[in-house]
Amino acid sequence: MTRLLLSVSHYVVQVGGAFVLMALALPAGTLPALLACAAGWVTGSFAEYALHRHFLHGAPRFARVHARHHDRPAEHQLDAVSYLAPFGFHIAAWIAAYLLTGRAEVAHAVVAGGFLQYAYFRAVHRWLHRAGGSPILRDLARFHHAHHHDPRGNFGVSTRFWDRLFGTGTVPCVERRAAPGNPAGAVAPTAPQSVAPLSGYAGADRPPLTLHDPAPVGDTPRNRLERACLDWLKDPRDLVFVRLACSASAALLPAACLVYAVPAWCAWLLAPPYLWLLYAKLGGPVMLMVHALSHRASFAAGGRWLDRYIRHGMPLLYGLQPFAYFPQHVLMHHAENNRACDLSSTLGYRRDSAADFLRYWLRFMTLDNFGLAAYLWRAGRRAALARYAAGSLAFFTLVALLYWRSPAATCVVFVLPYVLTRFFLMAGNWAQHAFIHPAPRDPRLQQATLLVNASHNRRCFNDGYHALHHRWPGLHWADMPARFRADWRHFAEHEVLVFSGVPNNQVIWWRLMTKDYDYLARHLVHFDWLPDGHAARVALLKDRVRGRHDTGA
Image 1 (tube, rainbow, N blue to C red):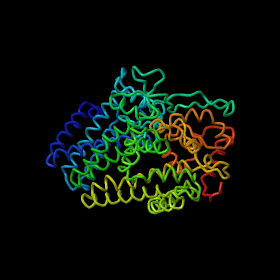
Image 2 (cartoon, one colour):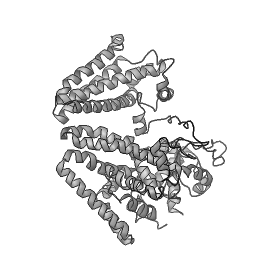
Image 3 (cartoon, one colour):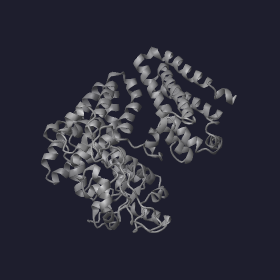
Image 4 (spheres, one colour):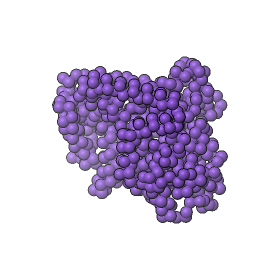
């Protein structure tokens, strides 16, 4: 029976069944059927990750059977239980899709996408364990073989996306090589570039710290558009912003228009893939691009229109009003440095409490639009206040009109991003300012953390160097690793917490919500001021997250 299930009959059942289901789904319309099939593929991909992580490596009964595959990968590709389990997911997906849309044809298409994704997973998994391997899948093979070496991470098989999203990836992406013809020293803008170890920061029994965060020294245009835009940039390393703005706009604008073009029930069906594209694929890089351009004038006069589009136009799709990010983040947050007058201050909250975070987020959601206006008025920032008020009025008027015209699409494109973006921004700020020194000498440093060797730094312009960013807000993102290497002693003297190897700040936030201090303590960089012993470092972290009132420092 097991041999029959694991034979080529699998592909006949899954691929053939997918085509039959798609034929049954066509009465709903070709486009809705294809969109539902794509949604089924995405959810099937998540099921692959979740089943592998939480059942095959979480449930003892399944883990014992799955261990045979880890012992002899080529011989034991998949056991019968693991083969049959996804069919249960397909049944659940059909029921959920039918209850959501009320149309059996759409449910058929969703399951067809799940069938095709599972057949793709089986084929990829088999190729990953072939003796010769496939050159096309070389990077994915490295990722999966690392899971066989250490099964605590890299649970995705056919994709690395979910591991990146949930912080369970343990192997960094392969460094990109400079394109042929690049000038000497020029590297791709997101390629990691090592700097010398920070020797002497710890005792002789501790290994030196080496930075692998991106520090490009140049960039080369890849097409005529980029060559034309190069004249608008003050620093050629910021060509990556032009590249990202073009690719993100080419993906997000048609996707948003598509949500408005389809029927209401189909708009809700499109919500998961659209939000995946908006946040998981592009959210971090786009928002950190807006952040970098808000702190540093990167475009010369000829490119000011592109700068305005990136900083005030693109955030509309993330539910942010025009002219809102700059006054909130630069004029208020950096001026107040997490102290009492900072509307996003974490003082007074217990930073490992989910209830306190919910209170913090709800305050930001409900009151801080008015609070920011009041702050700008008190600070005498009348021009910024006028732009903020006009941008907010225009944004909310536009959303109200669109909601009157198409409620479902407006909820997907504007209302849900309005809520989710503020959640992600506040979770990130919470993590960046979670470990507060009880008596800070310099609040720019001792109320923020540093994340080095983080996968998020490679995707999002060294966003982990937050304490360094508060000290030098206008420093170019590519210069941060070198500046940290030059001034690490200053951060050590101020007892700044530095974490190495944590994927991103959302992982810090999640570990705080689950009170997983063991994980956080293991990733601390061992400066000499830290107490000796794992338990003592855990106690230090717990002490720094307790709610405090502003010290006035």
